[in-house]
Image (cartoon, rainbow, N blue to C red; front, top):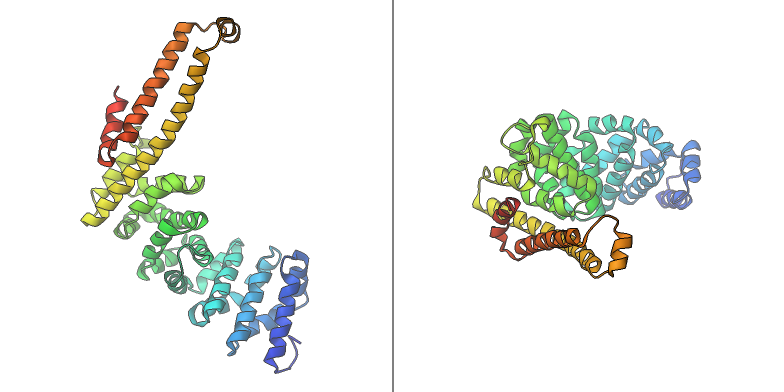
Length: 352
C-alpha cells in the first residue's frame, strides 16, 4: 500500500501507523521494515502537501532511526535534507519528530557532516527559542548542536542567529542532560577559538548558569563548566600554568570584573555566594559526621581502646577530636556568615 499508486492518503496514513506499531520497541522489526523497502515511500511522504501524512512520515523515521543498523542507511537515503526542511516549514509536531530523528541520526558519526551540509542551525535555533528550555525537544536541539558545533559553519551560524543566548538559557533551566549538552557547546566553541567566542558567550550572561552547574550538574557537566570558566578568563588559558590559587571563586571574580552591566555582575556575585554556601553546607555535614565518630571513640572503655586502637593513645585521640571540632567550628563560621562575607572568610580560615 505504501509503494502502490493508490491516491487514498488516509490508507497511506493507516499503513504508516501499522508500521509504527510494528517498529516501536522492536529492533528486529525496525530493521526488517527498512530492508523490505519501506524507506523510499516514507521519504516521499516527507514532501507531501498533506500535513498529517508528513507528520506520520516524520514519526516513522524517528522510530526507524532509533536502530543502529538503520542509521547509516537512512543517512545516505536523502532523508536528512527533508527532515531539515520540515524543521523550517513543518507543523509543530512534525518539527518535534524531525529534530528527534536528526538526533538519532547524528549519533552515527558519518551522518554528522550530512546534517551540517543541510544547514540546520538556523532552524534548530528557531525551534530552541520557541520551546520550553526544560523540554525533551530542547534537549535534542542542543544535543544535535553539540555534534555539529565542531565545524566552523555551525559555530558561525549559531552566533549569527543569536543562538548563544538560547543555549545559555538551556544551561540555566534545562534538564541535567540538556545542561550537559549546552555547556559542551560553549566549551567546544571556546576551545576552538576562545578569542573569537569568549565575548559573545560572556555577553549573554553565562556566568550564573555556569556557577550553578559547578554545584548541581552531572559529574561531566561540572567538569566542563569549570574548564569553561578557565577559558573565559581574561588571561590566555594554559593548563600547565594553573596554580592552586586559581580557585573557582578567584576565576569567577576575575571574569565578572570584566563584564559590562551592573545587573550581570550582581547576579553572578549572588550565585557565587550561594555556591559557596551550598559547598559549606556539605562540608559542615561531613565534618559533623567525623566529629561524631571521634566522640564515640572518646567514650570507648579503656580495654576496648587499648585492644582496638593499637599504638594510639588517649592523648592522640583528644588531639584528633580537638582538630575535627576546630574544623567543624570553621565550617559553622562559614555557614553562618552572610553571603558577601563568605568569600573573605574562606581566605581568613585558610590562614589559621
